[in-house]
Length: 433
Image: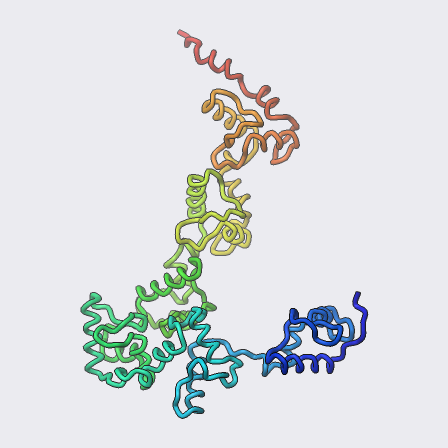
């Protein structure tokens, strides 16, 4: 029933304000009584269906978002936004850095405790810091670490040369870990240079002609780290910041398009991923056949669109995803079909219920077991276990699975397959002179 007194927008606003004064938060649908004899759940339902004077086609959450935009807006986390919050805080507090008890972040509808909790719970993919304090140490080393103020060109050169000597001539990057002989990381050193208007990459580029900021090896490492953290899925333009590097995947794509890397013939991130990780990016019949046959070897049966078993070690492909890609013709797949239909075409002798195939399956069973199969035989009828004998008998009785002519398995064998005793007698007969 949707009856009851009309709820005015003014009453709803008053209920929201009363709740905020009592709890310091906005209500949600599960928060109990809103007005005498009226719960927030009822208000949520009436906002959805438009009864009792409320607008309809919305919800309590959406209505609050639309009518309290400034109060409900929560600024997203990013390296740039967090640094801006710190700068604003320092400007308002005599240069002091925020800490977990510093309260609300102006204009963000977050607190510094929220930031610390997000870092502690490893919810921010763009940084490896585990607390607000450690993140501030990384981002503002000149002000947070005394040793950072001692950085000179000669010192940085000596640190870089020591790193190259230990790493076969490779250059250090932001994500290269601790700096040997200095209580800093390369991330902190880079951030110290950035505070001075430079960066580690720019500094190295001016002093070492052979320096390449993003080498293919470094980019592959970024992709592998992303894949390990995302069930072997590969990154895209929407994948955001690359943790600890100062790069985003959008910036990587832009660098490809501008031709900034001499080693990269590709003109986009997508094209480079296609060329570098073809097994993950391009679906080919040869790969699918290989994965199918591995599946049969390991599990004794053909995969289906519901199969949850791994397609291949360290692969982002799953059988449901392959089925969807085949239907859509995506990932360069040309033959639009379901996985099941494609398997029928690729392995007809094992999957199509036809007289010639059934004769071969019955003969194979007789050769292996010394007798003809019955509807109760447990062994698969053919490679891949697409059919068992009970299912075959049922299909013959019902004329399903493409079979024509109602019969039973035993009747069909009696009419179409030579008895085993006759086979033995034929085998014992002497050959003509």
